[in-house]
Length: 279
Image (cartoon, rainbow, N blue to C red; front, side):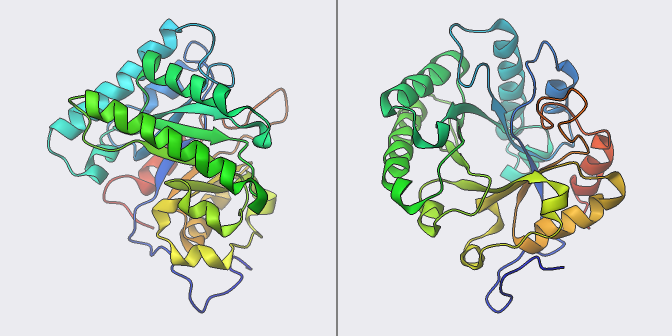
């Protein structure tokens, strides 16, 4: 299958390297209590999860979201203060919580985005930000770099006043495609695929991504049939993605967002990529 545009210089993940989950945004905790509870279950290799109330932090603190954020933060603090290495902390249900900032393909004003980011920090004490609908063209890169630089400063200030902050904040660009290569230096991680399995199984990865380690890239794929789960994970590893979210939901039959709920094979995929398990 044409997974790569070039294999000469590709730096891909081996079967022994650990995949983990990035959750692009479950439904509201009141509507999806099981999904949010699974994020803190021991053995779940969670890298991060996105909190999105209303394409941002919402108009006021939401008690259900505050509770969900607190549970995730407590799980992470238990893992970190237990002196576990970062990968062990993740596998103990200790992923980071990211606030969702909707860039609207570059059309939202800078000031609005920074105000939303500060609100996320004040209300939910997030560990970083997920920049949804991020533009991918070269012309938009300076504006994105300005935004991520400012967000990094906000997160550094948070760390300086938070006595328990052992790690710097995380910034993820929700691109959904391979952007101009300069975006790789604008954030910690790039979502370079977000779409259906019918496209993913024949997808190609941009050659420039081979210069970066797997923890710089994430893939979100919906409509993955259970019999093709192993193939999907093999593609992710071969293309050099360290963070994934696969689901058999397809966005049809009344589903407004295929990523808003657990896949029906959640337990199986957790066991496949959980602690000590490799493909």
